[in-house]
Image (cartoon, rainbow, N blue to C red; front, top):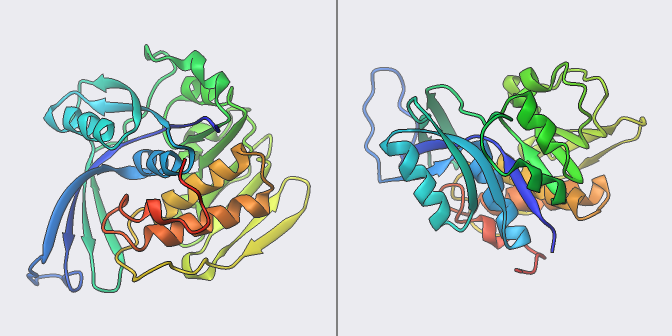
Length: 278
């Protein structure tokens, strides 16, 4: 069994399904509302759990009612959670889900990440086949690197820059200015850029490059929240399993497409075509 983990952040999200995102000054009525612990760390960890059968999330949460509720919900969803609680509010968010399947996100509060000095079982990460990194300090980053394979989001560039830690892959969105990668030293094994319906491309440190087309969506489109993070989970799992970069991005594409068919981040993740459930 492939052992996988995420070192990352959690956002408590309130979702509202609307016909369209309101223009300034307008009022819209939601046809459905629900809440979930989400954000890049939690969503990727859940995708890894669907692929591997189990996954561990190393995270920091606010020491308030919302932060503790997020921990309880993540455990209920089946994740192993190694968390430290900070004396500050839990990061939250509000998401419009419109009739076109698009998501529009507002985040509230600072991203909470783990620190290498936090009393968590960091030594266990050396026994893991793959780790995905979204948030934390340099100490947490160094512990994550002890895993066999390490993938990170370009949103963690502030921590990655100047760390001297080599990634097996760096993943970002070509459509999101906040996820544009910078040159790192040493360079990642591969830089992977997603493009939604346009597929994506990758460039390896040795000069090789490639591209993929978007995977067929295995059902009606529900919403796009969590698709990029689900892609990252598939990519991380594929590389941790020993697959090639082409195989890993193809699995990531199928995970992202499956996520489109669910309401919120998790419902569609278990529908990845061609993946046997552990």
